Length: 474
Image (cartoon, rainbow, N blue to C red; front, top):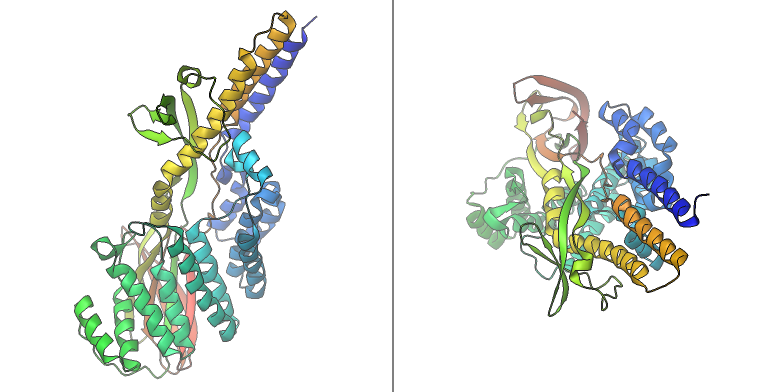
């Protein structure tokens, strides 16, 4: 007859193998049918797949479900419905907190079991889509409210870090969008302030580049023009020097202007990568060392009593950590063309670069938490295994439980590979004058080999700013 400890161990091994099978699957792979429909541009089918996904119906993935619903319904031109989901996402972000149970799930299992709370740049993109939805619905007042919320979001980003250098502490693209919204409502004073904030974000960055993006020429023109319209002559002179550009007065087009946002490609997906560390005990406590000799501090927020342990007891850790895998877009350039004018779109937001860079910036902090999580599991194993007991059955049981914890730690270790993956890889924009009445517009997309794809549409020149966004998903 199989003894209880052995039977228990067999059960744990079987469970561990099941865990291994699921732990090798990333978030992207688990809902691949939805993402396949998105990449094919079949948003109606994607919406159905979204509702069928059991993974996205789980409480811990509530925010991702709301973001994807907002994005998909926006693409289906269901703008009221889209904002319904984005408003729910906004509310969720404000209300969600890491409670004790959520933190425990992250410590004892893996961070995929915790509630997804969103990346900072994902929160900015909520405002982008909400503002466009309101503009398309003709709800200018609501769009202006969204513009004001962009300021609050950037303030939260700025307050997040003591060291603002090389940190995602403000988003110039969101300020540019804010300026365009204010200008479309004829609020030139606030439009200038927003454009100025965007320009200064670039000017104050290293090499005057913000996460790989140089200041768009259109932004320079908008800063100078709105400063002049407000009669801020000192500001005109100041920015002429800063931007090395002379302000030139141009007569406004009779039909106003068209602002086109080109959403190029799809955001990077998260994959899992493994790192190997050893735990070392120094004069000030425990810390982790990788194979290259790099030190990672122990996370003080993790409950861990290691007074009775030696560093040798907690050697050789494998820890899973996410990395972004970019999906290079097919198209490299977009030209916006009317009968009278032609403008090349300029890159305004690089979500690929933002995602990769911001993840690197918090690597040490998240690696510390992940390693500390592994240490807690290992410590529990050593405590159970190390007790003195002359009873053979009890000893076998303890050894079985210790082995089970070891297997569980090995197979449950998993990186959090969740993110809002239907965002564009990057966003370009262009501003082109319109004639009064109907305007036929073409977007010429070109790949690296010169192959073209053309998007045709028409807009009415009303004398104001008209907005249009187009996503190329290849």
